[in-house]
Image (tube, rainbow, N blue to C red; front, side, top):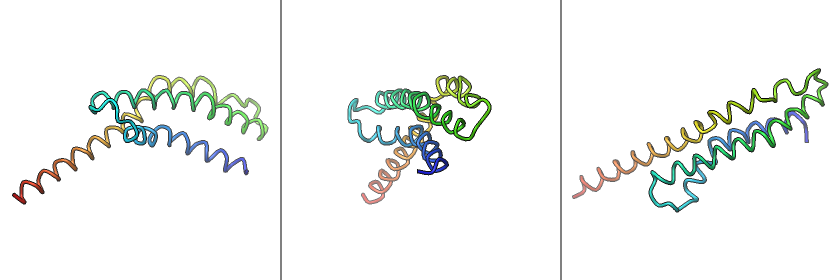
Length: 120
């Protein structure tokens, strides 16, 4: 596989873990039943997954790519400056995804209620 394509897939994977994984988990988990308990659980699992993805896949692949390209310091862009923001604020992207789901769910419920109210 081409190294640029491989790197592009790893970058896309980072966004998938941050934004798509919470959506999948939200619909895959049926317990706890209430959204107010399920949403924080999904955000926590997604945040931990994003931290693990960053430390175990993204950074090592970036270092290997920099070494392959002959960088003077391959660790320059893949050190604590990449990991610390994910640890501190990595929960925000999954929370944003869950927030969009909640808004869509609320919109659909109101729309559904209006249809049933006007039909009666």
